[in-house]
Amino acid sequence: MRIGIAGITGRVGRLLVEEVLAAGATVAGGTTRSPEQAAGLPAGLPLFTTMSALAKECEVVIDFTHADTVASSAQALVGTGVAWVLGTTGLSAQQNQALRDAAGDITIVHAANFSPGVTLVRRLAQMMGQALPADSYDAEIVEMHHRQKVDAPSGTALAIGQAVALGRGVALEDVRESGRDGLTGPRKPGAIGFAALRGGQIVGEHDVLFTSADEQITLSHRAFDRRIFATGAVRAALWAKGREAGLYSMEDVLGLPPL
Ligand SMILES: NC(=O)C1=CN([C@@H]2O[C@H](COP(=O)(O)OP(=O)(O)OC[C@H]3O[C@@H](n4cnc5c(N)ncnc54)[C@H](OP(=O)(O)O)[C@@H]3O)[C@@H](O)[C@H]2O)C=CC1
Ligand SMILES: O=C(O)C1=N[C@H](C(=O)O)C[C@H](O)C1
Image (cartoon, rainbow, N blue to C red; front, top):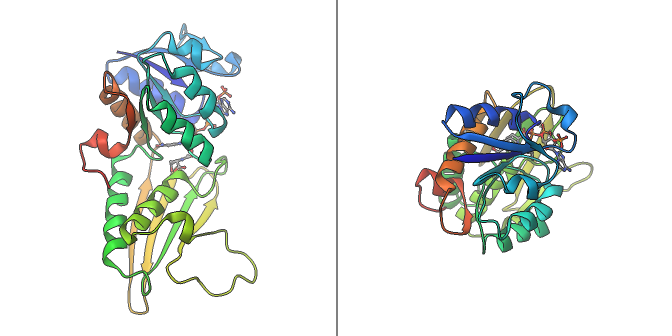
């Protein structure tokens, strides 16, 4: 199987090269805006500056880049039959719409976090949202990442928040409280709060807290090594090949029922 890697010089991109090879697949090439950054990648690896050029060489592309690339990548992949495993976070409403539109024609697996652990945390968060009344249990999500991260709250924090909202039968946009600062007034009843911390080289930490007057329940996930994201994405790529067009999640890849 021929897998292309968009963002091949990145933190996750470089690990994807190793994990694709470890899975017995072929690295068909990768994209970079500046091929001189390719130091340390295996010699002779084909490098391209556009998604269209990479798509001609592979059956599946794994993409960990930047939200700004999503619309043009969707345009480049539609009509090619190439499946798209997308790990990029920080997507706007329009960029998410571009994904849904492209999924009418190609197979897309999109996950804010490809680790099996976070996939299960989301499920537990949904159950807690459903079981613990929103007027007495305050839901807060705290995440911490490395200092280079460009989006906040993390895609994972938002995906966990969506699971809690689903459990509560509300839309996250209606109850989301991010970035409290200054004279905020008391916490809004039923709010789902987010706090984002940044520092050093932290790979990814997420805590979901449900706090009432009488007790607190915390779900915690710690990624010790970002290789967990690369192995999950390669697993998704192997699963996606030849699959019917549509927008799929990590739940689909792991064979879990949808949230
Ligand atoms: N779903 C998941 O499990 C995970 C998701 N992520 C997400 O994946 C993304 C990448 O993370 P990470 O590898 O740490 O980031 P990096 O910045 O290390 O790598 C991203 C690569 O994408 C390329 N890139 C960056 N901006 C652009 C742009 N505007 N246009 C085209 N290419 C661009 C760069 O390559 P070059 O300069 O060579 O062009 C860069 O090396 C982020 O959105 C992050 O949140 C991260 C970890 C896990
Ligand atoms: O940028 C990162 O590093 C990570 N991004 C993803 C996110 O935004 O949730 C996943 C993981 O936490 C690492």
